[in-house]
Amino acid sequence: MPVPVIAFTKVAYPYGWLGNMSPHPLQKDGVTYRTSEHLFQCMRFSSDPKIQEDIRSCLSPMGAKMRAKKYRSSLVGKMCGIADLRRMEECLRLKCKQHPQVLQSLLKTGNAQLIEDCTGRPHDIEVDGGNHAKGQPFWGARWDKTSRLWVGQNALGAIWMKLRAYFTKTHRVKFRSPASFIGHLYVPMNSKLLQASQETRERAAQLAKLAKVESKVLSLLKSAGFTSITDFTAAIDAATGGAPQPAPKKRGPKPTGVAKSAKKSSKSAGGKSGIVRTRITAAKVAKMKVLNGKGLSDNKIATKLNVSVPSVGRYRKNDFKFTEKK
Image (cartoon, rainbow, N blue to C red):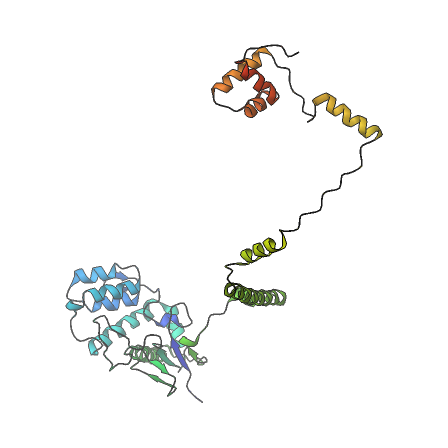
């Protein structure tokens, strides 16, 4: 039976906790580091506390790696050598001891081969700007489609498997190895799509077809010299004499009897509009003059004083001198 392979990549993907970018803070010598990547990069500058503090203060693990790249001239020792491997093993050991859930998850991998999937970044450039595995990944490995083999040193995966063997003996537990997991082939499932009904999926397919048809129509119109469907319809209207006018509304039957008399009574009470206007007095004319001084129009003055607009205009011509309307 082939040994299962667990190739981990992003933190958000399954087995992302195996990566140094996972949000598991570590403590060493009374100092807290946000991730194992922070601690590992700081350990590379053990002779310069200022550089260590600058790297440790970074908010993200990638930021810590980029900050270490800034100080590459102060690096001590060779990158990706025996000293680097010991530093990484110490970081991962602390991660297991200070986070029991990480240790339990590691033991549950059984005898699966652990690989950091570097297929997306096959050269695996270090903070000093170089590659230390003859053009292949050092900390992980990449999948070769031609040979269908993992190519690279996979140093990080090897350290994890070394620690797993150690903790398996000390804890005396056995777990059944899970199925293989390949990180760069993992596609997160959309939960909303899974919960959608068949009717919704069919509607989505119909909309996709309509979108394709619309794009084809637009391409044909553009080839004919039109920029949009609106321009095309405007050209059709111009060629046919304009858009068809809507049919005139039919008038209803004339009011007769009681309804007719009721309509007349409403008009007689409030004029053509049916609105009852108050009688114009000298006080109202004085208010008209004040409102006019504020720059209000005839319509606004008439609305505020509940009088007709022609009345306001008549008094405006007479310089707002009160006269009784005959």
